[in-house]
Image (tube, rainbow over all chains, first blue to last red; front, side):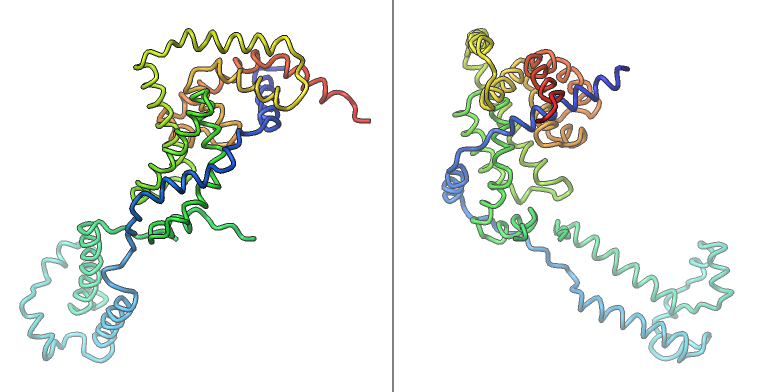
Length: 145
Length: 195
């Protein structure tokens, strides 16, 4: 019999003996006594998880972003920056982004992704980061259920 | 009947329902008390320590991070409470030699008797555990009574997993020799064919 088998046997025997003799049982009125002590303690104020942006809010944001993307892709010409968006976009020079992204940028250009789509994606990322930052600042943690 | 899980009780307590804490006490009181008796070797003090540990757990329930199991968290509180009481005991100059002598007398008294019933076997196991150092004792109890994996025991005791394994190995050998009579009796009953 090798030493590993020896240890296993030893372990099995001890486990059986411990199981047979059992745990010590706490006195019968133990729970009541603990609860009596707890009664003298102030009630805990629960930290209930409240998301900064509710699920409904997220749905609305997603719908806005999706409609913006849909508008960009299907309703407006890929090169026509008209009306309100033109006014916004003329303040943004996104060529730096394209060069910074290198290959990825050129691919984006190849698929003729308009500035509005890029802005929409940036907006999604921005909102995500904002929630993370606010959550950390307020020290709120998502409760696992 | 479906048992509520620990998190349901915790959420209720945090929502202001103190009574929900009784569910957690009921669930973990026996192992917590076993651990305390094993460490403190005094049922009266063990009961006090376990009660205090549960009250502390209630007070700091908001700080309980749900990454670890609740059982691990509560046993760690019980363990720390017992270790702190043992330290105070030493500061108050309670003679360990006296304590050991009393235990030895008790052991000898038991040695002279036949192990006839479960209570005596329990005492024998309790005494064998008493021969182990405190940390080893708690490791053995958590391992054999609660079937906890080495990693969880390490979290409770604040030791590394490899240290727990080493201590467990040492303790197992020591217990085996301490419980020799009981083990022989156990092996005999295992080998005897059932009629």
